Amino acid sequence: FVLPSTSTFSTSCRRSWPFPVSPLLLSSSSSTKMAATTGPEITVISQPDATFLEQKGVMDWGTWGCGVSKFPWTYDSAETCYLLKGKVTVTPTDGRQPVTIGKGDYVTFPAGMSCTWDVTEAVQ
Image 1: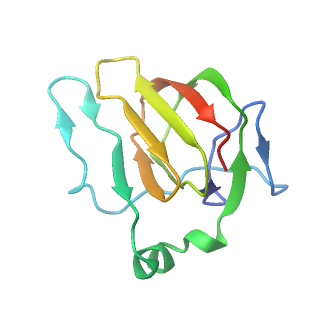
Image 2 (image 1 turned 30 degrees about the horizontal axis):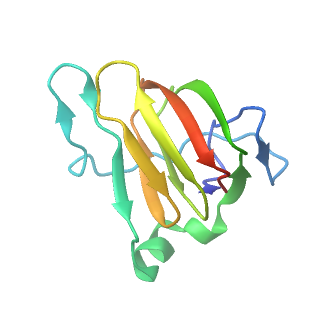
């Protein structure tokens, strides 16, 4: 999938650009649903149109890929990605709703969320 060049995502999986990454922060919090006591949920926009992706600059982001695997992750800051291929279920450890995402999904992970990534089809 593609990540802004400022993303912090890093595991044993691969990135296709040579510089460190940190998160893209969305300026609008109105699209984020709040869980009762755990914080914002993961937000997913399935199959956004080309205009949306162009406005977000998605095709200028670097890419990251990961094979089938399962690993823990914590988001220090809000982070956004767009999946080019694959399938993954992200399960927060604090009671927030898990999501299964795949090709064509634009996803925002909230700051401070710890979760488990279960990659069932290699992602890019």
